[in-house]
Amino acid sequence: MPQSELYRGFRERGLCGSCAANPAVEGRARCQQCLDRDALYRVDLRRDGIEPKASAKDLFLDPSRSRIGVLDIESSGLRADFAVTFCVVIKIFGRDETKVFKIDIRQRNMMEAEKKMLKELVHFMRSLDGVITYYGTGFDIPFLRTRMMAHGMTNYIRKLRHLDLYYTVKSKLLLSRNRLMNVIEMLQTSDGTVPDKGRVEPAKWMRCIFAGDEDALNEIVKHCVEDVLALESALLKLQDVAPDRIIRK
Image (cartoon, rainbow, N blue to C red; front, side, top):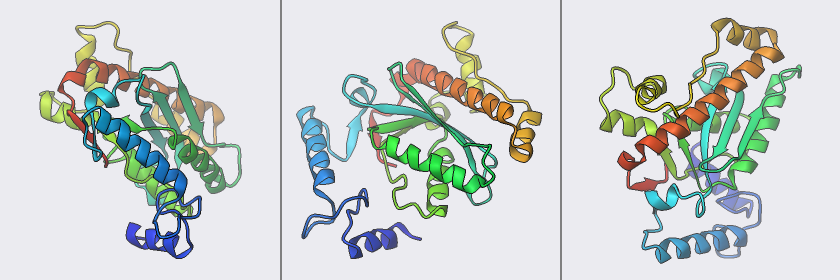
């Protein structure tokens, strides 16, 4: 369903067009909670001389003023209409806080298990001011959004401030391949503080997908956590060439 139709559906039911969780203020498209939060956010941005429609990189990457999630997902496939989400890992940038969401692979009904996990995820993401990913605008976020819509969830991921480091690497560096693994290997040659990026054997993916192997799933989750840590480390090395303005995507 197009976003405009979904938004219109919220309005017809008298719900907030942003969160769809509370009644909209009379004569307005959003609830009082969303209006208040947006007003405070705009005041803070203007105080720092920043246009409300975008965030300055210095504000976005300042853990004392922003709560940004470094995000990565693992799934059973690359197309969200024919796959499920195995796990989502979010580390708060610059803070010692990591949240892991993983599907309960022991459940017989994998669709219900995924829906439960995604509901917990979208609730947590409301606490974030934005996300950092590696090709997340092309895969991670669209995949999660599609899976949420497939489950009929009204509270899905909408546009959010998003720093996709893939496009920084593509435009500012010249590597043989623009994969995160290549970035990490390049950075490790000169700096031993950059962590390794994990890899999962194909056999474990197969056991997770077709045998419901919980040990294999735990290996996939561990790999996802390593990817998030590696991504955060790469951004710390490349933040000077990252975009000056972080926009909603």
